[in-house]
Amino acid sequence: MMFTSLSLRLRIFLLFLGVAVASWGVVGLSLYLGYHRISEAGAESGLVFAGILSLFGIMSTSAGFWLLFDENVAKPIQRISAIMRTRAHADVDASLDMHEARYLGDLAPAIHAVTGKLSEASANAEEIVAMHTAQLMAERAHLAILLTEIPVAIVLVSPRHQIMLYDGQAADVLGQVHVPRLSASIFDYFVEEDLRAAHAQLTGKRSEIKADARGTRGNLSFELRLKKLSQASGYMILIDSTHARIAPDEARPLIYDFDLTEHDAERAIEHRPLKDLSFVVFDTETTGLMPNNDEIVQIGAVRVVNGRIVPGEMMDQLVNPGRRIPPASTKVHGVTDTMVHDAPHAPHAVSQLHAFARGAVVVAHNAPFDMAFLHRHGKASGLTWDHPILDTVLLSAVIFGANDKHTLDALCERLTITIPPAIRHTALGDAQATAEALCKMLPILASRGLTTFGDVIQETRKHGRLLKDLN
Image 1 (cartoon, rainbow, N blue to C red):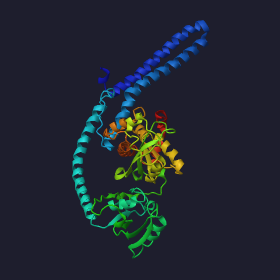
Image 2: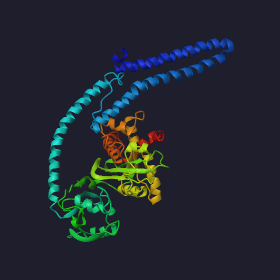
Image 3: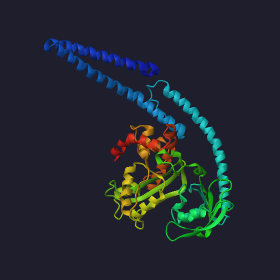
Image 4: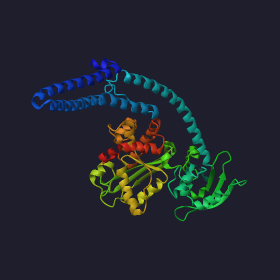
């Protein structure tokens, strides 16, 4: 109790003083024992014995003091650092363990006071932001209502031919080819040759042209109108709403991200900033825990663009494993044989995920386990899973230290993410929680100077052993 009341500087001084005193004691004891050995085995043997004994004694003493320092100083400082970053950059009100930091003097109470003031200031700012956000959302909803009067599907495309806005009608039209995806190449949906030929005509005085374009899947063809944007870069694609299968008076939400006009997609992946990347966060539920023998029963995935989960862009697919699902597995994920009776088999479902993840970084919690299933079925379908991969287990280790727990539940608890019990251990529910964790960890990584994909991968490699132990 007396030691915890001392200042931090004095405690560290006493620690080093203890190392010195213990070392002196070891050397003194070694010389004493060596002196008595001189009479038995000679002076040279006694001195060698004293030297060896001193060496091992000092090493043992240093190791003991290091363990004390690591447990009571280094580890608490590391945890406090992680908590401060999550509070500052992920808006997480994580609590400090004052008992764990009891040997750090006034450091923990001072940090607690500062972060408390920051939380108070953040709460005030959030009220103002919430007010303006509500206003923006109301304007957005009003715009969506107005769009219901326009009998065309609308897609805005960046100069690099990435989708940066689409409405509900366009989502239905694009969905006849592939799942609509913000930041995806428009050439995933329309034959590149057709669209580039039409786009080339948008020069000079021709600001709008009509064109026919084939879909990249099936025998679909579309009558398009391409329109140059006068006040922004990129172009607009208008599609007759007769191609859509939803009623014109149904809700037409807008999905957009105009920051995509600034992204450099040509740069090598390892040099691209994390904020410029698109992520597909996925999870699988299976018949068991052996990727070589077990089968997928459910795939869930969501997309993250510009650090935000894109509403509506998700995959929630039951999968027929071609065998009975063990009752023990059903007890975990809730998927029964009846539920998957008419579901597609794994090769088809994996192909759907492959198309959904095109051009994106694939993210999973304990990715080697899930990726093993995808590689096996991808190989059978002739698909190559060569996507860049991030593992949130390793990201958690980078931010919070390798010694903490890195289960999905533990990570969500640290980041104050709530997984409703009804969707825990469902593929989409776990994918959604993992995506929320990713969105909160990205700014924390950036605050540590890990701003590019290559920076993060290099850092996660230091913790690769965690995945081997986990699996």
